[in-house]
Picture (cartoon, rainbow, N blue to C red):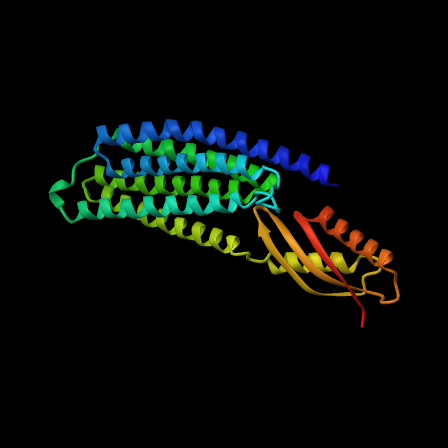
Length: 296
């Protein structure tokens, strides 16, 4: 079973690596294209969107590093392995988003307070924004589908980062269109909205990752399913003190199993092994620590 889990982990890691490399290539091209186009067209919104794509690129590299580090086997200092590199990576991605969002708010807000800095945007900026929207939405769908298929919260988080890019491109396109018809401040307002959106998503990612690093338990529904699976094991008459915590995209389970007090130590041990195997076969669980108690 451990060999099977190892093979699945290797396949999963390879899929994350491939998907993230695709994202790196796309975000590198988009970043350069949007920032250059924004400078030449005079669109602050497009430049802000390009910086957002740059933050995506930073997140991609964080994912690549975390994906590699999290696959390291356990060692003398990390008895449970290095899977929490993924949780740490999510925290870093969230922090990057938060800082980028605040920076955009500061820049766009400052320029809104000085009307003399408002300028007419060239029409080419609108087509660049629409093109960026199509590319980012396609990237989101690809990464999200892959993340769901291999059950990678890290890849799903990075996919939503791409979706935030797509949403920001919509706002930027609207802002550029407004600027072109005479509302010159619309481009800066679009940049402000993008900044709020990015900062909010960064906060959510960071808070979520922090809770996981603080040993947040699994969802109540999943805990209930694990409890049902344990109780279905032959010889288990009850259980108590079921505790779970996240380790990357896997989980650690700790539980006291109640068995017939007349059984031998060997028989009780076999029941515990069977219960552990049942859970690990059906759920994404790294380990199940069982304690055998006599039934009252």
